[in-house]
Image (cartoon, rainbow, N blue to C red; front, side, top):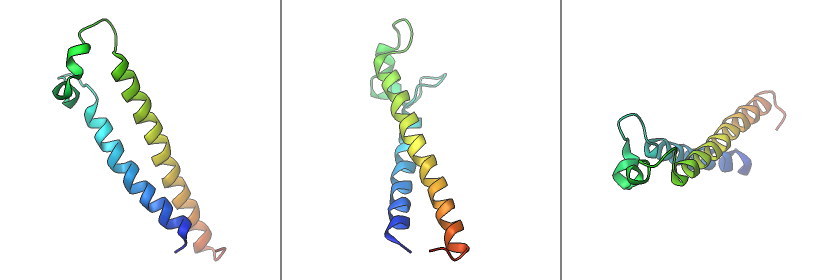
Length: 85
């Protein structure tokens, strides 16, 4: 394996853990885990709070990086399988 593959694998593991944590922090119908950390206090105002919007942005960013790692590993495995690397 090359350093590129190891880098993608490490990045995939880190983003998987981060994505799981970020999704669990979101406020669901029942309040979710975010209410345990004070997210439910500011959500009583009109609309979503700044913290929720930032949490949405971080979740989307980590999800895009996670998806790019999956695609990158798939392409790299296809190249190696065909004898290109």
